[in-house]
Image (cartoon, rainbow over all chains, first blue to last red; front, top):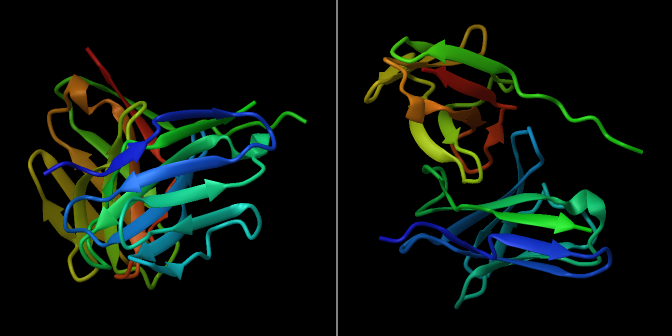
Length: 113
Length: 111
């Protein structure tokens, strides 16, 4: 059973470009969570999604950030018009149901030049 | 301007010794606690969890202790090995999904 997959593992963007981060949950998991981690800090919750629904996006910046988890395909975290402060590691986790252990992917490291 | 990042607290232990990593959590309503291990360049890896109706739980070489009175969580690693070197995070949850992660402790195992 493959774990949580994220791609790309590393992404470099110039200021003003768009970043798209993808997450494929573990097989059988329909709950996806996105977290952001700055260097030397803990993970910060961003958004929780189930298939086709955003359940909680209280940790997402109000502008430029969006997330989706379509019926088919991976979950996407989209950052428009990136700024240097968006540089971080973005981790996706999945679980079979809410309230269970979350399994983390390897992360996408975004660098904004 | 330039921002100054916080440096993770570091615990250095000799190989073979026991390690104790501590964590203070913030929400008295939290009822689920997890310890994660994160190696450089990788995602967090689940180590052990505990629910608030327990005060101790043991796994393979690891023990988690929960003191709800002072909102304190600890992770004990027995016979620490070089492969245990990593950053360790505690996380608290309210039984649903929103985990709050601590800032982490770096464990260095000395040969």
